Amino acid sequence: MAFAGLAAAVAFAGEAKVELAGPFADGAVLQRGMRVPVWGTADAGEKVAVEFGSQRIETTAGADGKWRVDLSPMEACAVGRVLSATGDKSDAPSKADDVLVGEVWFCSGQSNTELPLVGGSPRFRDGKGAMRAQMTRKPLVRYCYQSDYKLSATPRKTCQIKPEWRPFTPENLGTKKRTFSAMGVYFALELYSALDVPVGIVGAYWGGTGISPWTPASGSLSVEDTRKYAECKLFSAEEFDALPADKRPCKRARDQPSVLWNEMVAPWTPYAIRGFIWYQGCNNASDGLAYAPKMHALYNGWAKEFENPDLRLRFVQLTPWGDARIFAIQLGQALFAAEEPNASMAVINDIGNLSDIHPNDKETVGQRLALMALKHDYGCDWLKADSPTVKSVRAEEGKVVVEFDNAESLYIYNPDRSLKAGLEVCGADGEWKPGRIVNLDGENGNIKGARLVVEADGVAEPRRIRYLHSRPWFGCIYNEVNLPMGAFEKEVP
Image (cartoon, rainbow, N blue to C red; front, side, top):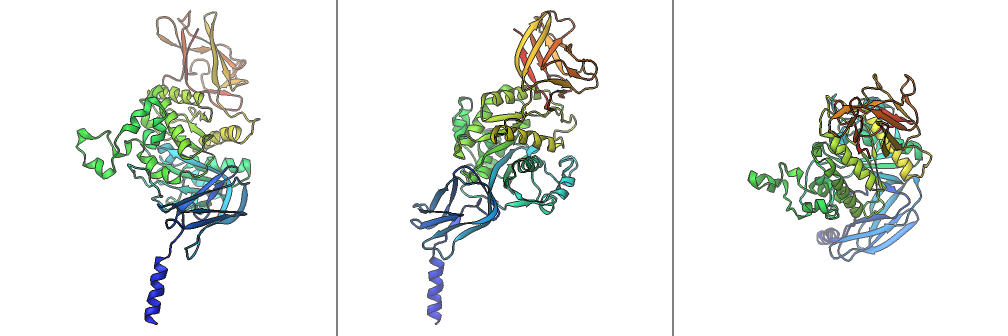
């Protein structure tokens, strides 16, 4: 009997074990309306059957033990079902319970993305987060936190934090150790409210990080200006720390190209997602217009690695915090938004804080991101979701006339509406003078028409006009749906 028991134990220990990849955990949300890759591991050559709902797909693990199938596009489903993978040599299937089908987004960036709904520091938490958490019980809206604050010199194949999909409940959102990006929470709640389908959001973010660490090497290769990123030798954190200071490619290990993507996002590819929301740039504030090609590299890389050429990107333009460099990078962000058809930019220059780089109104941020997604990604064509952008500029009798897209009317919300609107005009001498809006409609702040007519004392022949270049950098000009105008600088023909 003893020998028989030992033989059975040895046989059991030798049996293969099929595993679903980490993202396919209990409570996961799968993307509706597109093919859904499902992958995992097994013994080399093992036959694997994946089942979900009415679908059953068979495949065979490769020589490296990896397998993958693609589920056919599915309708949204708010009823939790089992996703399973069964091997012909396995003792039991690998399962994920309570799996929903709906809309899935990634949430990434630096500290203003990271800023939590609930937290210990009054200067690093959402201003309404604790109140919101108490009132939020939405089991069909779920988040998965994936920030381990580490880096990798090569793309990870598995998640270093075990994915846990958690529903939006007071117990989860209101607990400091479990809470999530405030921006991501508000964005997901707005989508759920408008679409009435399950929503899943995955968060990977790290304060004080630049854009290139979040950019896959494949994205860097796609843009000539950032080709150098893919040519760099990357170091692990330990290798980097061991290098002499004069041999280090950057100040910190986490500033190396692709290392945060490799660690925290790559293990999720090619999970089916609609798109990603992004709030980053403070750490690239000196880039100015050069930030635009870096954004292209980021987007191209994410779209390629997630195997989604139609991947959507809704991102946040930087808001003032007392740094004069912001104007130039705001222009770079706006340039990218104008060039990439699958991206759009939320303008938030009206909710900054000159004494804090982390303004705590993330509800407005999430709402403006969601508004753009609803219009551009979900067919809500009747929505007005985009901030005013300059359509044309011309000189007229010593004044500058600026026409705008995304505006049927304009208004100013500012204590001194005519003199402190943030507009400046310069003539041939290149000297900038404060601009004055002359087409105000009385004293209520409304502007006549969807245009600005601006003049400046001492500028008879205007050559250029700019908005929000100078202190205090706050936006105060809005369109009819309360979306603020972004910073701009234009030549006057």
